[in-house]
Every structure is written in structure tokens, then in C-alpha cells.
Length: 135
Length: 175
Image (cartoon, rainbow over all chains, first blue to last red):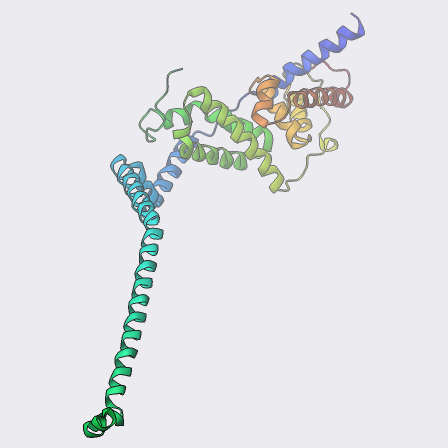
């Protein structure tokens, strides 16, 4: 037997020994029961703590209701958002009209006041004197 | 492969309970061979099955479950070993044989276990998955998320080291 064959043979024997050494071992007899008990305990703790709100989304009706509500909110919000500049422009125009109206009203008021002042001036309060002046 | 019913509650004889009974020795053995600490291996294996229970909806077939269990067990073992500074097994502590070793000799097996236990975490897990689970390097590489070349290199180096040390330790005795 050559040295190479000898080495290969040794490796094969070593690998066989490793397979034997690391063969599977049986789990303790009550292993599965312990696992089930822990799962049951975890489940009861989870139920006691209550499910988080997003768990409700796993129910199809609630999931669809949430999707519909979200979509409706987005549409309404979008429409509102698009209307905002238009409303703002309309408000601005109304403000300008109001300012114009106030300016006109102000100037009319000034005119009226001037006329009233003119009428109430001392020259105009003595009719006889006025007539003299006319003559 | 047809989907299997995994989400059944435990103790019903189907689903999760079946999976635990079918794979408990695989999971426990990987942990036991890696940690060489029976209570720690038992606890770790139980945690792996608890994690399996939480992940059942994501696992679609028996093969997927088996792959998942090996992968999670391997990673948990490595993490456990890194977190816990367990005393390292020294090869010098191994008792000398009282009688010549024969094929299947408990002494040789104990010696091999101790030698594998002295390997760093990843090469050790590679050896356990190779010789306990009979996995090929491709599967081990996928499971441990490492290149195939690294797995092959770990195997070759570990075998060479074991061969040298076991020959030195027990002389020219047939394994």
C-alpha cells in the first residue's frame, strides 16, 4: 500500500469515527412536552396582554374598511388641497373689491362732508347777508 | 412539494406537535454536540422550537422547516458560545487510554468529541453539520452564510488537525 493510499485510508477511518461520534442523540423523554407547555404559556401571556391593534387588520372586513377609509381620506384631502389656491384667489379678489368699495365710500363721504361743511359755513347761515352779496 | 399543515395547535397529533417530535433529536443533538452541556443544549433546543412556533406561517414545507431548524440551531449555538465564556476543553486534559483503542471505542469517540470541542465556533459547527447531519459543503455554506470554499477549507484543516492529534494522542492505533 502506498503512502497516499495509507493516508486516504486513515482519513476514511477518521471520517467513519466522526460519523459514529456525532451520531444523533435522543432528546430527553419529556422534551416535547416541555416545548408544548412553554408554547401554551406564551399563548396565554399573549392573550392576557391583548393583541396589538394592527392584528385586527388580519380580519378581511376590517382590512378592507381601513383601506377604503384611507383611500377616501386621501381623495377628500386631495380635492381640498386642490381647492385651496382657488379659494384663496377668490378671497383676494373679494378683499380687493371690498377695499375699492371702501375707498369709493370714503371719497363719497369726504365729498358729502365737504358739502355739509360748505352749507354750514357762516356765509351760508345768514340768508339776508347772502342775498346782499348776491345783489 | 405539497404544503403541510403547520399551524395546528400542539398536542393535536398534527402540525407543530409532529414537527417537534420528528426533529427534536436533530436539534437537541446539534446543540449537545456543539455545547457539550446537556442542560444548556436542552434549553437552547426548546428555544429553537418556540421560535419555530412563532415562525410557522412563514415556513411552507417540511424541507424548509428542516433547513430552518438546522440554520437557527447552528446560529443560536454559535451566539450562545460567544456570550457564555464556558471553560475551554484542553487536549492535555484528556486521559490517556487504559486499553488499546478499537473500532467504535468509547475512548476514541470521547477523544474526538474533545478535539472537535477545542475548535473555534464556526469550524466546530461545520464539523457537526457534516458528520451529524451528513450535509455536503454546499448546504453547510448556505446554512452558515459563508462561502463554500471556506467550508471546505474548515473541513480539510479540521480533519488534518484531528488526524494529527489523534495519531499523536493514541499512537498508531486503528481508529
